[in-house]
Length: 150
Image (cartoon, rainbow, N blue to C red):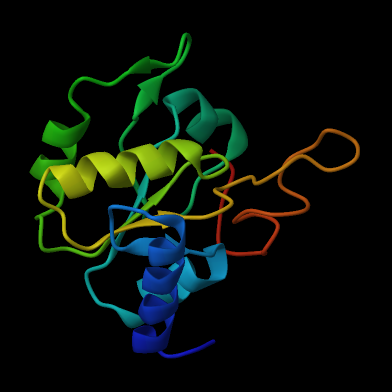
C-alpha cells in the first residue's frame, strides 16, 4: 500500500473529478491504510443499528446512525453526536453499506466544519453479485479487511 500522503492525494483527486464538496473518496483498502498510518483518524460507520447487529461491524469504528431502521428516517442528532465524539480537526472516514449514505454523511460533516471528511467508496458490503448477495464483489468485507459479526 502507498504512503499516507499518496493515498490522501489520490482520494482528493477522485473528489475533484467527482465534484465532491468534502476532502475526497477512499477505496476500502485505502481507508484501512489511513486508519493504520494516521494516528487519530476515525472511521464512522453510519449504517443503522440493525445493520451493525445483523451484518457485521469494523472493529473500533465509531457507530453513529445517519438514518434509523425501520423507515430509514434521518437521525436529527447526527451532527451533534459526531461533534460530541470527534473534534472537527480530525480525519474522519465515513462508511455505510455501499457508499451512498456515507457520501451524505461526509457532505453534512464538511458543512458542519469538518475539513478532513472522506467517503469510503463501496461501503461495508458493496454491490450485489450475480446471486443477489452483497459482500462478495466489492466493499470492506470483499476486500478481506478486518470485521466481525455484530
